[in-house]
Image 1 (cartoon, rainbow, N blue to C red):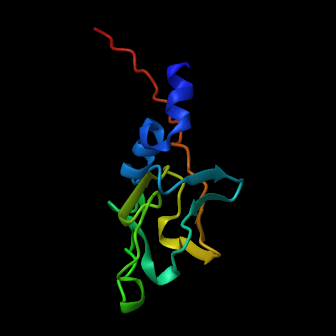
Image 2: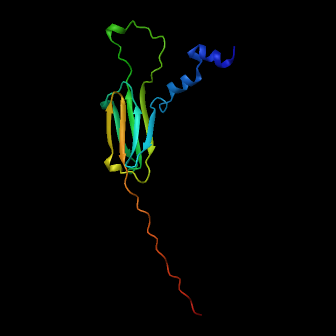
Length: 142
């Protein structure tokens, strides 16, 4: 039996699964697309409510930051005797940061959340190109 098939038979030895569980970036998958009018970020945050997520523009409007905290299940009288056999869902704090391009209107960012999917819209502005100024070259008589 090959090493790959041995690894796939028992999930305990799956190195990719272990990496996903330990890496907050992989546990907060985010797509970024650019339209003619905006930059749109879509993050999958299953099981989270909007109150558990923070969207900020930091570093003088240059960085979009998405953060939050996936809480552990509370232990109640009903489940004190429960025995966990396998845990794959990530818990704890997460943080994603995206450097915004120069055409982002960081003061007009909007965010919405529906069914655990966060959509952040960053409008674009027209970036003025520096004006070209032709300098006349003087002739020096000497």
